[in-house]
Amino acid sequence: METTLLLFLVLVLTAQGQTNVNVPAEKCVFQYDMSNRVKITCGHGAVLHIVDQHGTTLLTGETSNVEDTPVVFQLNRSSIASLNDEAKRASKKLIEANKLLKKVREDLSVQITNLINLTSLLQKGDEELKNDFNTIRRHELTSPLVREAIIAALQNQYNFLRMGLLSQNTYLNELIRTTSRLTTAIMKTTRGAKGVGEILDLRADAMNQTLYNITKLMPGGFGHGAFFGENTVFCPQELKKISDKGTSVVCGVEQGQIMVDPYTPDKIWVMYDYVNINEISEYNSLKSLKFELVDKTYKLPFSCVGTGHVVFRQKLYCQKMFTNKIVMYSLKDTRLLMDKQLDHVGVQDTYPYQCGKNTDLDFAIDETGLWLIYATNSSKGHIVISKLNEDDMSFEKTWVTDIRKRDVGNAFIICGVLYVTASYDKVPTYVKYVFDTNNVKGNVLESTVLPFRNAVSGDYARVYALDYSPSDKALYSWNNGRVEVFPVSFIDANDP
Image (cartoon, rainbow, N blue to C red; front, side, top):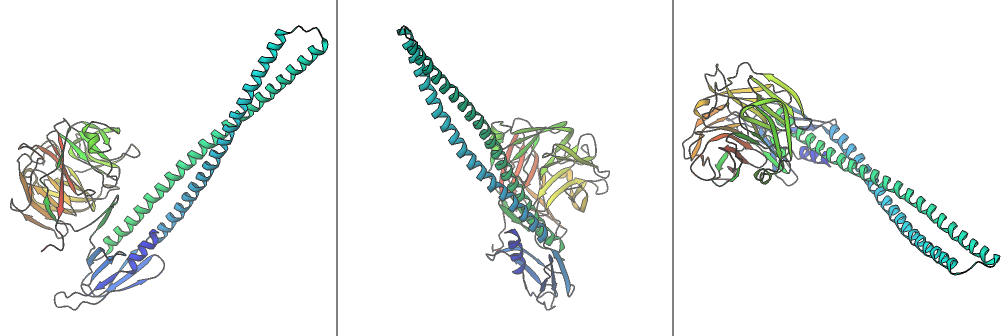
């Protein structure tokens, strides 16, 4: 199914000519060689579109201005096909386990019925034996024939009860074996269901990776599409408004951080305080957080500092306390994956946000992945943003802005665009500065362009953490012991 979908996306790939600096554009030609590769050759400044079966544009971008520049990308058909085979095998096992479960249930029902019937017969035989004993007590055994007859009757009754008990024991043993088979069938069914679920997760990851590879290999750059649960988000997205109406949950601890992993949006994680943090709590929802219904608590083999932590793909990223190291910890495997020393960044309140509180290093998540917001001596305290590799925390690309980190309240990133708030403690405040890494351009905004309430209710704010969640398009803040959620909206391409 997924292979068909990917092929469909490629086969409906079209190109439209577009005039660019008086240079005539040409249509693109694509070739599919049946070995997982598609080569696209375009003229000057052609615009390519990948659309789905409903005609909705999924990815779009302008090609290189170099004439006849080919673009080659991998479809990953082999990995998808392999996952399809695995899914079929897992589904087959699940079907077989369900059949076994049904058969065992039928056998169990028969065994129970037999056992009930036999028990009824044994009860009847027991009553008859009692009656025979009562008869013996009422009569004198004057005749040898009568005595022999009674002995024979008792012997027959004894044999009947003995056979009944043996049969009952046999049925009980069979019932035990059938119950054991039932347990095995349930375990197989559970493993089969789990296997199918894991395969589906892997297939979704493979599809995401395929589309991600396309975006990286296009010379002009496609807008990036990210899959978060049931939601699909594509960039670019330009922030239009931060809602004044939000959700507030009292946590009782002045500083802290709430984290939403876009790949597991049904969970939230919380780390309390801003120093010596060696514990992270997992909740099923904001309501669970409200009533302190912790689903799971993780004890960390190190301590984090600040409020700039994030959880991404079930991995915690944070700054290690008393060091200039950043740490990656697997919540799934509960083990430290790696730490990385950053010699050039300011730490321990060298370049924090306005609130201080060791907010020198601030991780961020957007539709394109993992980021780090910080400042250095060489940047003279101006905000630096780096795109991080999520696997080894290496710096893939870095941009230096022209706004000082100490002069801003908080910062977050959407589709590779940095948004900076004017204050952490004023109600209301506003987004005062924007830096777009896609065109390497920064802009100072007036207070009326992107106002931000900075507090769900009241006129008091101390926002120690502010992060964007791409899975539900909302800003999550930690405001002086309250977790607050503000929905955001984006400019529609069809807006006048």
